[in-house]
Length: 155
Image 1: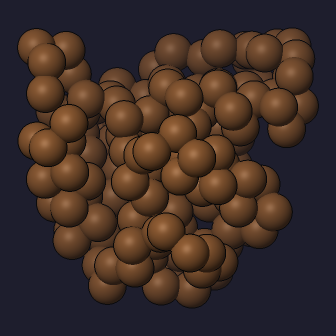
Image 2 (image 1 turned 180 degrees about the horizontal axis):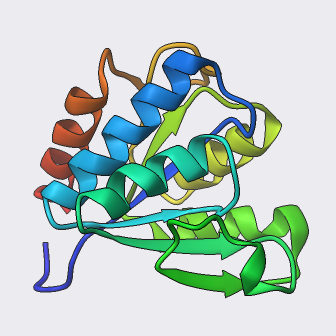
């Protein structure tokens, strides 16, 4: 790992379950406590819950937005990047993150995970989400973040 802060992507459902929201917030909090930057899509659901956890723990949240207006970001985003690229912004999220953590999710999450895997990045998947070959299933938010940081040591 270089002297730069690691960037951990949190991807997931726009309409998660209550368990998904709790897991996402815990992931965000753990990322911030360990001193990494959280990158996400900057909107609601898992993105907002993870951003809330990170923000409340004093972390930095980078939101890569699908639309043209940075004001559309959820209130916990520190730095909003409006792309006006719609779903194509998923490629930017996958490229920006050093490692990805998936919390539940639908097709957008699947695309981010697949792009991350294609780029040779680790993708850790919490319970309740899509499973695709190459992702690493994890049981808890804490283990996802611990494994994410461990994987960065081997880069």
